[in-house]
Image (cartoon, rainbow, N blue to C red; front, side, top):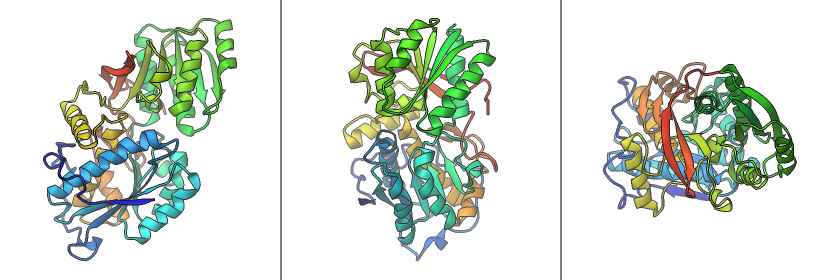
Length: 401
């Protein structure tokens, strides 16, 4: 289903680009005009091939909703180069087969930029279509460094925190807590969680920790057999649950139901409270992720953005991908003004000039080789009383790639 959003949230939105607070942070001052987008006065179309339903929706929806709010505020402030922006959304339902045709449909409609879903494996068919048409493609929260030249996406960028940085913070946090022996429970269903556990294990052992064992499973599978193996072996000080969504929540529940009460550390895939009701009283569970959307973040701009989101939608963002969605719109505006064009190669060149640009999600840098952030500061959240609370903000001390 396609939905077009142009000014629909104006009545509830606050002052222009309040989500970002840093529109002037372009990496340079571009010359020229973005008038080549189409006829004068014609809206600039940004397409979004994302999941409002299905297994990816808990991650895509907060990012997409934040995009809608940011576009509305952008238009209140005059759009881009004086031209309004239109966001057209096709809900893929998380169906892999729908991404490529949805991307083609939006490009046929005149989309100048394509936003795609928050997982590389799922999004890549849409991204490849965009590449074929020289259309800038942005994933708000893909965490794999393969999203970019490494994966053949020369004009593809992610506003997410890359796994090497996220996983390093997971390991460094655990080590700092004095946890010396670890079990890694790896969801093999997507590259993100595979790489997350592998990188966390490398960094953990490099810091002097011991990897007792790594057990694998597929999203949605029971890990009761794994739990039995863990309880019958050397007791871990910490368990790394490298999973996401409902399957990750199921794994967390089975760990606790099986009598494993040791601390558990996860990444962005477990951000949000959608899975907590199934584990009443859960404690000693930590999540390394994007800024906290619960009103307690270390950055006041994030707390303001979360409050705006709640004012507009009636509820808090489900997780920190809200900050990446807002930042995707910020980045497009800055790149277009720098490039003076909607040509994909020119927009990509503008983005690769980003060095610590202060977007809502945090300082953002790209390079010719790397189109996702690996050294950006992360948030550590703790599960407490069925909610998430900010514990600390920390950048990776060392990134392993």
